Image 1 (spheres, rainbow, N blue to C red):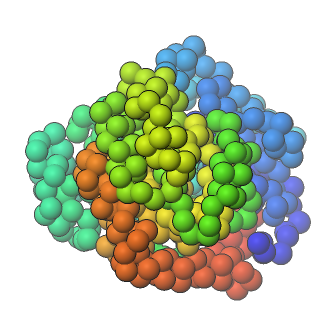
Image 2: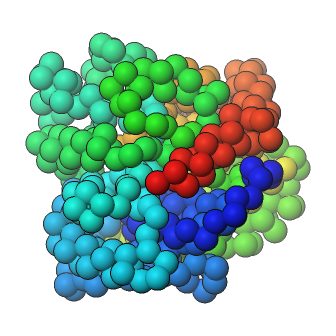
Image 3: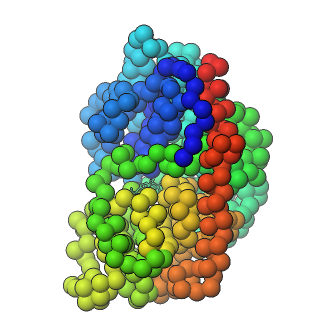
Length: 457
Ligand code: UDP
């Protein structure tokens, strides 16, 4: 894919990713994009979930020393409140020392680019007089919901997170088409904790010099306009990042390449790809409903079951005996982790049953693969609402732990007329993606602007 004309610079950028798969991938892709613009890249990272430096010999890697507590975080990685608090309190001083050291080196630091979740780095950057740019790994539509958290709280919508009203169909004023039930909620977080952390993230993003988005203007033009009213910082929409460089080298788990050889054996547009990302967990009974829904749909499927993603199970031992061979009769294949972008680009892949993480959604859009959305928490809920009601490139399966509903959602997208209409719409957006990355396209131009903006510091 074309990138804007290379600029002569060796100025050093320091990039600080959040140590989660869905955040590491886009940040390392962004690093590659900026490296292709002749910036020198230093990745500052935590010791846990650290990227593999051997996959990036052209970058410099610096590890932030920790106090040993990080080990606990690995075993409880879904506890996002704890993770955010940890990196923004215990790791602030070690981060500052690392940054000061890098600044004292000959290369200096032209600019710090951090994941928005590292909100505390803004004060350090201000103290050390280093420009900080925020990288948002979510899209603009969901960020708008995050950014209005204080107002929503005052309207008494957020307090209701802990109530049954979390299921409310009521539209959120100013954020339509989002409903109260789509508002950000997080696994293992209580309402107060969510609000406080989101406010800090939003505040830290507002104070940053600029925000870089892994999205493209044509998809979120209206939302960008609305966001601009509250966030006057420059916004650079340069996505989809992974269309410049593949993400496979930043995978924390081994990607099972037999996924592709299995797909090779099947006709075009015939396989449902099923994956719920790197964090979502389900209970054993829910896992079995998913299995029976897939089996009863009689469609072919490639299913990623991440080890540890089923409560109380190592992997798939809870499946009925002979599930793949006798019940599914060879129509299904299960792997622990897949080369997702290659799977979505494979001609045999027809549809994607997803948890609606933003990377997965964007990867599906780029390959023109219709989605069945089963969101659980965070930005997944707004993402699913936009996929099914605004862009109309998928359907939302709300009750995704009930085999009958699963079967009927799969048939809607893979067999019925509705699926064809969805496919036409997403193929149209795929065409727009290709154009926006070409010379003169929106993302191409925005990347040029970003490079010039950084060079102006
Ligand atoms: N992914 C992958 N193999 C898999 C499942 C997911 O490589 O079997 C990648 C996927 O391509 C995406 C990332 O993991 O880039 C998941 O990010 P997303 O934002 O979709 O969800 P999260 O894991 O953060 O919930």
